[in-house]
Image (tube, rainbow, N blue to C red; front, side, top):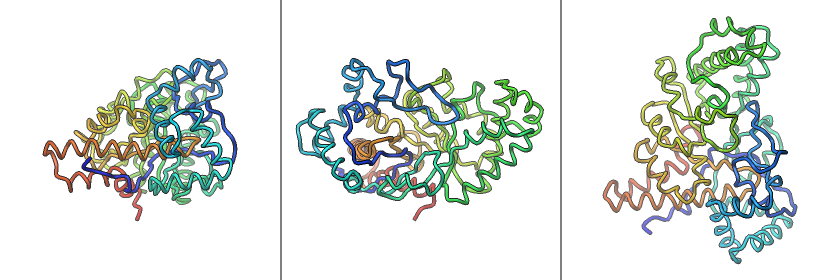
Length: 394
């Protein structure tokens, strides 16, 4: 192969907390987190728009679903293959698990650090409700950057405030305070929690329906939400921070799955007031990766993060990357892992990304679409430089 990007830095634009405790885990705990949909149990955690959707409850997987569905996911097979190579052992789930437990029970933090060094993971943007400075962030053996979750703040203020004016003022103050603490951006679930598509709502319009929203009227609540969101998008221009919009079908849905298409944001973004607001379409993947690429190409203020494509769509990731890179600027594409629980997810994501980029870019050079130097520059942009530019990192 013409390219070997294995030594390049990898910046993870989206992850969650890792479990780095020295303990023995089961195979369901190890591989189960790759199941991002519902499991066949009535005890499963439902979708919660005010917090986390409870991405994985691996222990609630039936043995039948785990054996015949989860273990046969493309990402699960890649995981097993990569881990067996890293451990230099048989490509067998039980053998790999045994070696993992041996290492993790001995010193899980050292094992995690070795994984990160192997793939040169230089930064993590962490999505968590925990406060800044929480010691739980020490699970990452690299630099940590934080996203501030705004949806829980909004829904809490609807309950406690007596007017939209009060809500907006308190929301504004909370967000400013978070940015002063060091949060590099915010994250919200605009497309998943509202039935209506994104649109501008004035403070006066929100005030007129605030009492109805507070009483539980759904449409009124959405108008208040969009007024607050509109205010936040104007704040991004003043304070220069990105808003990460959860758009991918990365797990459970509350029935509004068709709302996830990033194209629903065209009306909102066509409003000249938001021309310079900073947006990141987060968890871009099936079935809307092309739509997100169109948005990133069309609007100067839109970036995309492929934290669903990577690593969950591993078997087809080269084709998806090629599709995305064919339309969106290579200077606007970032890679996140969407990892949770195990540091191996971050590790295999970096490996998959570097391999897939090598495949796509070698083909581009072979076809004379770009030269070798241009291809190498593209790999650096997507693997780490775009994120560094967005967050203004050295």
